[in-house]
Length: 114
Length: 240
Image (cartoon, rainbow over all chains, first blue to last red; front, side, top):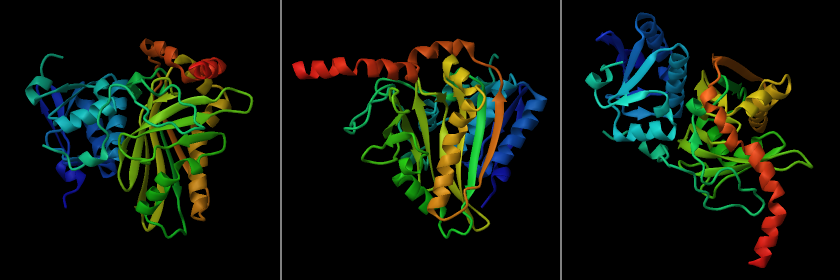
């Protein structure tokens, strides 16, 4: 089985950092996601999270995401998300994470005017 | 794409609905309220993690969570009660919380279960609760020892709660004593030492003044008003 680190990728596009989340976001994702955020935040002000490949998020995974978002917000970064299925949009509503960051349907729209 | 986790998550609700109320519970400050996430709070944003290792206990993470769900309120320190729904801690269910000291009005609030599986569960609270943000209870294996954990990302919901939280001695006890006590009781249940490891980090020292208006939902104030109105409600019920 691939580790979270092997499946999570950070790339850049249009002056923003894009973090492609792994298929499973749980407690094992914490370190690699935090490291990815730190690296991305050092390079750019805008960070977009790609949820397109995510198939599983549990409660500790959401806690990991909340922690990263809270830190990004406190650091003054622009944080965006795209590629969320209807199910994950619902999770963002119930946890009110959708108030933490703007959600876009696609990568191109997430990298639009900012 | 449908997530494999779908059965474990609650569905979004605009406002909370309390279906059944135990006879001895005060149901206030929950029904009709929206849930509040960490972004909706007023005070400084804290990441808190409380852990206890169940050294010597031959118990799996799944068994810890099963018992924790079934007897959630039993592990709380004295002074507060939680009334769980008949369905127990399950996605979308709402629990009522009553707390207080003798002679003072019962402080009433509640929680919404937003996630529950066999090794973790999460709550979020309604507007007016002292804190906004998710709180997660979990258990996991660490080199053959089961560890129970409480993790929260929370802000005080309004300026009054924030003021209370920064009071020396009082604030820390209210904020952290609840989960240190709970994990200590959980450890004692399995005969383990109550050595609770606490890690508290302030993620954002700023206060969100745009959320100062949350004071209108303050559950402490509304609980006092609810208590003052209790005799009138009793009279009204007799007249009906």
